[in-house]
Amino acid sequence: MVKYTIQRLIMAVFTCAIILTLTFFLVKTLPFEPTIGTNEARLAYMLNQVSVGNVIWSTTENNSLGELLWHYTQTGTTGVTEYYFYLRPAIDQYIVWVTNILTKFNWGTSQYISPNVDAMVLIVGNSLSTSRLWTTIKVNFWSVIFSVPIGIGLGIWAALKKNKMTDHIISTVVMIFISVPSFIVITIFMWLLCYTWGLLPTQWPSDSANTFTTVSGYVLPTVCLSFGSICGYCRFTRAELTEVMSSDFLLLARTKGLTKTQSITRHALKNAFVPILPSILAEVIGLLGGSMILETLYGIPGIGRLYVTAINQKDYNVLMADMAFYTIIGLVSGVFLDLSYGFIDPRIRMGAKK
Image (tube, rainbow, N blue to C red; front, side):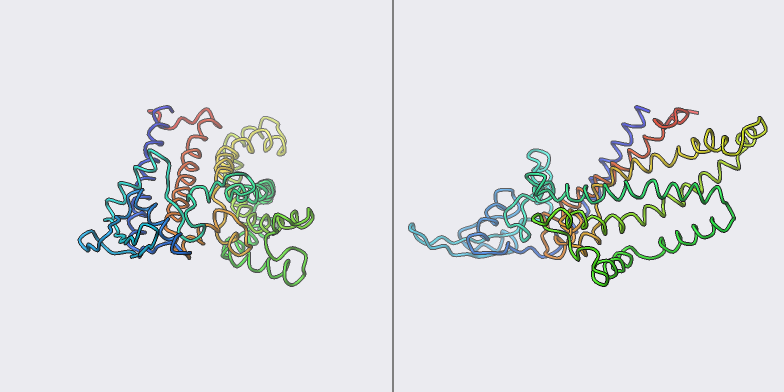
């Protein structure tokens, strides 16, 4: 297990490096623009890019330095200063970017969303009240609490009523909700619950909203995020429990005198939950990922909405920081899912020799 764990961690780091490297060079093919705001704010941003090594500054025009990004003439008490900013080659920017991350944990600064603010600060925030990550965790936490017992319960019910009307109804409803795209489900619920019936707020409540409005704001995200998980858990649980119930050891338990209920609760459920529990643990880690579609449509200030905003506003540094965050969360979830099998069932040993 130790050797397998080390191998999986090394592979995760290697995979993360490949994904972020490819993303970095793809992003660098997009046009580079100075930040918005006054000339002073733009100048401060460009000088920051000079300090981190992405841009070259010259007081005279010199096209041999690279692509001219911005020219600014500053008039002060000491006279006139010319600023010519040239973009460095992508490979040089990549080396500087990796060096800053490894030595300073500096992911660059925002260009448009919050000019000259550290990109990682926009994700984790300076406090819980300003943290987009914490907002995403709060929203997704309740969806897990809501979806896990309902999904597993429906899956057990469908397995116990296999090939009967109850099983057919549950399977049909699950198939419908899995087939319908998530943004359509979210839009329908927003239209009915928020705009047509007026039962819930039409947008995510502000920090100054009262307690009732704040609590009501969690209802729609919880319901919308839960449908996909409920359907997944239901199908997974039904398939695993159905397979276990048809196994030989369960038939042996029945022949020894155990009732159907006793054989299911003592043996079938325990064996069926071996692959189910790791998926639950992995989803708990996946809470950090959030939902881009829901957060954007409902106005939730989470990291999913931040990712979409960074793409639309061409805020490349924030985009890279958010992409790195999503990549790391996905890889950690996968590693944890693989390793958890060995901890839940002692008979499973990853990487062991036959």
